[in-house]
Amino acid sequence: MRAPQLQSSGTPGRRLAVAGLAAAAVLVTSGCQGAFDLPLPGGAAQRGDIIRVTAEFADVLDLVPQSSVKVDQVTVGSVEKVELNGWTARVTLRLPRDVKLPDNAVAELKQTSLLGEKYVELGPPTTGKPEGTLGDGDNIPLERTGRNPEVEEVLSAMSLLLNGGGVAQLKTIETELNNALSGNQAQIRDLIKQLDTFVGGLDQQKSEIVRAIDNIDKLAARLAAQKDDLARAVEAMPGGLKVLADQRKQLVQMLAALSRLGAVGTDVIRQSKDDTAANLKALSPILAQLTKAGDDLPKSLQLLLTYPFPDSATGAIKGDYTNLSADLDLNLVNLAGNLGLPTAPPTGLPTGLPTGLPTGPLPSVPLPTGSLPSLPGLPGLPTGSSTSSGSSTSCTGLLCPLGSSQRSSQQGSTQTSGSDGSWRSLYGGAS
Image 1 (cartoon, rainbow, N blue to C red):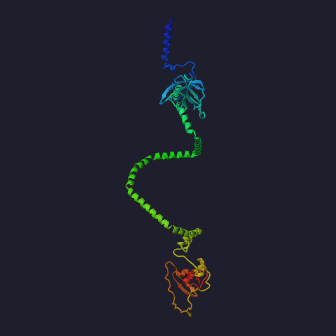
Image 2 (image 1 turned 135 degrees about the vertical axis):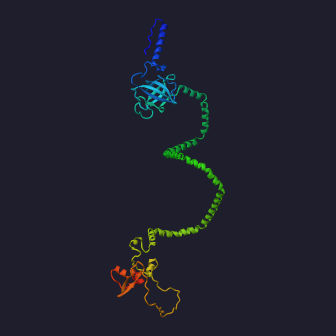
């Protein structure tokens, strides 16, 4: 829209009116909303290649648009807009593109002097390393913004300290400290030394303390996850306590009975202490021998149930019988030696025996004549005959397979002695 053309007249009053009307027309035609929208002559970042960056502040004080934006105390841009964003203030900054700032830059609200104007100071982070480059549309979050204290705040704090603060109490505090420390220098030094030792111990156990705190945190998390179960347990606890209260008499009687039982048990143990000690002492040699036996005892127990055959001999048993050739030694000297008894024959007759024993031939005992009845044959065992001194003798039952025929076949030759199918032949003809 073109501004209306006004012709000036020579009167000064009319010229001022014409100028005011022209300015109003310019404002109307340009769509300005206020004086903050008017460009300031000589301002920074007004035209050319510019970028816009936003910064969030918890408190912008009296910061207004068109305020300066500085980097290292040099004005590089201006504040374009200040708006409310929830509970924080969002400030839009207009900067030239050639300004080099890191992406994690910080913004701080400062004041040029005690009574000067506010401006925004941009700079690299005070902690940490600069990262990236600040570009168009970037936002500086609330944790990287701040402001300096106001003069009013400093003066009000000073007024509070001087007028109604604790300055008047400093002398009282100093006097009480002197009274408390006077004459207690040794105790104070010892306390400081103990505190130093205590703090040093805490520093050495810092990792354990941190681990304990972490474990407590995990325990708290588990308890929080099981709070429903804990609530049910707490709700059920009054019922359990009521049951215990109802059975209080029985519980008291039980505890009294346990007390009497303990007294009796103590008396029994006290009276049997000597016998128990003697029994344990007597068991010591047995246990020592068992220890010396080592693996022999378990092996002998394995043979106990299958004696005289070990477990490895079960593979040689075919069906319900097996061939066996055994020698039975009935010599008392050998038996005594096997049992660990003295084997020396007695040197003389025992004393104390009656003398004058009758002498003479011993009476003969008539022996029955005839042959022994043959044993009936066992089912499943073969029957056969053996030859003794050229005569054929039939054998039945268990004696034949355990007698001369099997033994002769094992030895590879025919034996005539000890092969008559008697019990003597069962044990290999031992004399």
